[in-house]
Image (cartoon, rainbow, N blue to C red; front, side):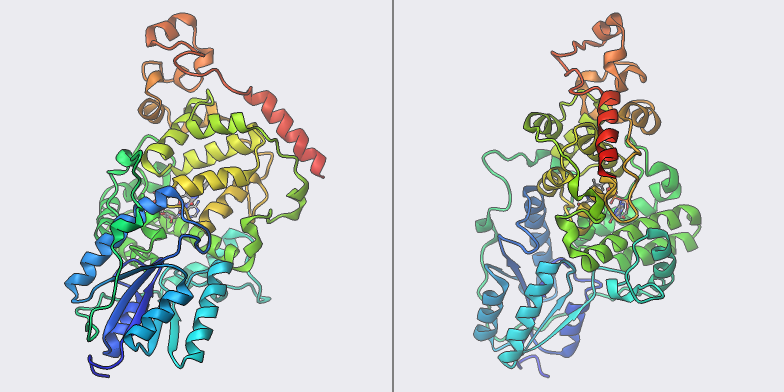
Amino acid sequence: MSPSGPPTIVWLRKDLRLADNPALVDAAFSGAPVIPLYIHDEEGPPRAMGAASRWWLDKSLRALGAGFRELGAALVLRRGGAMEVIGDVVKATGARRVVWNRLYDRKSIARDDAVAAALKKGGVESESFNASLLNEPDAVLTGSGGPYRVFTPYWKAAAPLAAHAEPLRAPGRLAPPASRVASEDIDEWALHPTKPDWSSGFQAWTPGEDGARRRLAQFLGDAAERYAKGRDMMGEQGVSQLSPHLHFGEIGPRQVWASAREAADQGASHRDIETYLKELGWREFNYSLLFNYPEITHRPFNPAFAGFQWRDDPESFKAWTRGLTGYPVVDAAMRQLWSTGWMHNRARMIAASFLIKDLMIDWREGEAWFWDTLVDADMANNVANWQWVAGSGADAAPFFRIFNPMLQGAKFDPEGAYVRRWVPELANLSDTDIHQPWKADAAALRTAGVELGVTYPQPIVDHFAARDNALAAYARLS
Ligand code: FAD
């Protein structure tokens, strides 16, 4: 096909990158003119994007647009439902082929199937690819052909298959369509917050493919070496912080896998690299769960939890969202989230356990808050992890394993660096008192400038009494 023939539309979604993008490579290699298209549908699917994700999308699309310009193509931005927009662009350009990379939630799959069917009816070809997983859900099945429900055997089967996943190179040049395709101005999408602009703490992020690559290189050159231990230390730079880049597809897991393996070959600690890759395995496992059990977005995976008696407590929920529970490590976690759009994994587990078990508030309320505030808000990972903490998920932590925020703080933030950073009003307390200020003596509090109930809240619940209540509610289930 000559570059002057009918164009191919590359419908971009959670694959905002040029390298290792199979749909884009397919279009580029066909020799046809290429129209990269991003459609912003305010309603989703899978659901309306949260505020923090909108912030990220804004920057990511700008970076992607610049990347396409270097290849000689213009990224087309349009708003609306995918069916209508794709129909319009096909009609306006005479495109004969539309390609995209697959998504794995039920609503997106239904939408994509409907788009493919409508295109076929109009005589337009379509094809989809895998850009965002090492192994797609239907590629890793048990001996009896069903999906895995337990992580360890899943990963034992999936990891050897992942080893063969080779990333693709970015195309060198793209042929543009004969005439310019109408595109919207991203400023008009108002993805960046105004009135107020709460995003000043997000400046440390660099959304886009280059930012993703730099973050991975930085991690592999430094913290990867001590990841197995460092990944739990909330006050240290021990993790990769690649999650928003992976969520938006600015980097793909095949690229992460290949670079991590290369680092191991060049002398990085194999044990730590394996531990890191296993975390990518959890991501894959969660996608497999979402694909095979789509109802986990709103129903407990373990139906025994359907009758759990949650408490309706808007005041405590508000204290939790604002980082004002009186439990320093929980408050540090929630403030880190609000300020930066990201929270350390250990802190996510502690904060989620506190909401579910100490406050006995439905995990779905916490999941919705995270959805709105996380830059890496991801249907599969968010839902599966909330259910994991709640004890209702696949291969979940048992309900009776209730995180003690004081012990978690002492163990994973022993010098209080994490709390000092995010709860500065406690910064002058000792390493011990900082995780339980209500136990500090009056002189220590005075010296540190802390007045409980005034400069920092008293605990909103008694952890040990709350724990007993939660266990009693759990016992009533069986
Ligand atoms: P690293 O430790 O550097 O790990 C590398 C990558 O592995 C991550 O980027 C991520 O893609 C994957 N990964 C690591 N831990 C997990 C995990 N537990 N489950 C699935 N994948 C994992 N992650 C999201 O991407 N989006 C979410 O919406 C999300 N919500 C969560 C909600 C709760 C209650 C909990 C407990 C965890 C949630 N996670 C979510 C998982 C995890 O906390 C983040 O992926 C991780 O903290 C991201 O930081 P990182 O990139 O530095 O991770």
